[in-house]
Image (cartoon, rainbow, N blue to C red; front, side):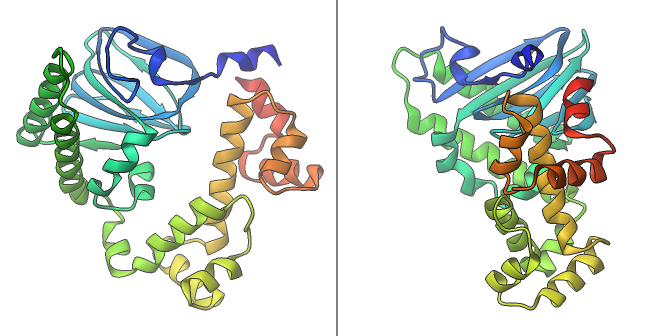
Amino acid sequence: MDALKNFPKLDLSEFWQKQDSGDNLLYHEIIGERIIEKPHKHDFFLFMLFENGSGYHNIDFVEHNVVPFQLHMLFPEQIHKWDLKSDTYAHQIMISKTVFETLAASLRFSLVLYQNHPVINLDKTIYEKVLYEFKQIKTELEEKVILWEIIISRIKLIALMISQEAEKFFDDKTIYKTNPILVKYLSLIENHYKNEKLISFYAEQLNISANYLNILCKRHFHFSATILIHERLILEMKRMLLTTEKPIKLIAFDLGFFDVPYFSKFFKKYTSLTPNEFRKQL
């Protein structure tokens, strides 16, 4: 179990202790090769803007190729690792959960959509506008007296510009625009997946029948409503197996499984590995 200590949960103070930001917001640059072989998670939100670069960034077990003029978003509790090559030059803005809650409304779509699409390619014009705001935030943070109202306004502007670009790249945005019920369904899953695993609960919250919810999911996602709940459970199982030293029994209980053999069988059905095998492979 000692190997699990390599999967820390990092807070803002781990990154830029010299920057006097009250541990609420930090600016940081990545220049050159960087490798994170073992996944970890943060307790803060991250905007990462690539001016140049190559390699990959793995977010919640999905690998994304790094290219110039690219914006990456990382939410609290998401697991990530990367292999960034020597040509990398990236700007990071790290935002505490408390501050992020005041900015979230500037991300115009459901946060679930951004978590499902955490990497957005920017055209050069938009990239330069976003980069300008990043650099202005850096300048503001270097002032002896920091005017937080200016910094917060600039971050809100970045979020709005990213949302404007995201609308072009969210493959499923049309689905959510024409069927807002599906956005609400995903949000409900995010809030209740640990304790509510039957679609009848979600259908009741949405004031529709379980059958109609299933029809919508099969029509637009090409799989059942139950699968969405199961996918969220599997993601959290993977996160907890890699980032905690909890016994599998306790992880099962935390996620609403009171039959440990069934928990293991459920996990293996979707991953082809038992929970113990998944832990050992990394």
